[in-house]
Amino acid sequence: MTSDILAERTLGDFLSEHPGELVRTGSPQFVCTVLPPHWRSNKTLPVAFKVVALGDVMDGTIVTIRAGNDENYCAELRNCTAVMKNQVAKFNDLRFVGRSGRGKSFTLTITISSSPPQVTTYSKAIKVTVDGPREPRSKTRQQQQFHAFAFGQRSFLSGHFGNPLDPLQRATDPLTFRMPSMSNCQ
Image (cartoon, rainbow, N blue to C red; front, side, top):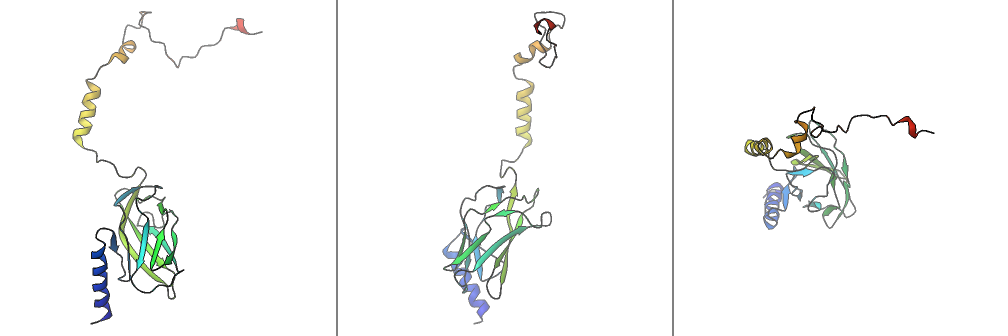
């Protein structure tokens, strides 16, 4: 049995032990925590991001995360460096500050500063927008809001559409500028 087949079997076994928690990377030697598909910029992730080494990586090895795509090739990240301990690098409070762009996701580049250095990727890892995930806009919701506005009560508008010559219905314009009388000046 070749080492690649053995590594693939080990990887499959490892992922089946942690269903939905870990995901494959571009290297069979590393797995990482599953990220939410869409997230708000500069917001704490729901779980700490971890990179797990399936091969031997010495304790104290620095692991760095970079994010990018064709629109934002080097997105700003916070807390993007961690130290490997017991084959796990845990990123405390990893934050995606840079946005991925409308309809675009980031690919993460994970660099393990071992000797020799190892690099792996997590493709289409996360979409980051300024407002984060929200309900999709639908025509029915927009039409309901429009109808509610168009046919709702209009009592607040009555003063603005009355007879402009009637002093009882004349609306005072808050933007009208009036000069103070000169009698108050000393």
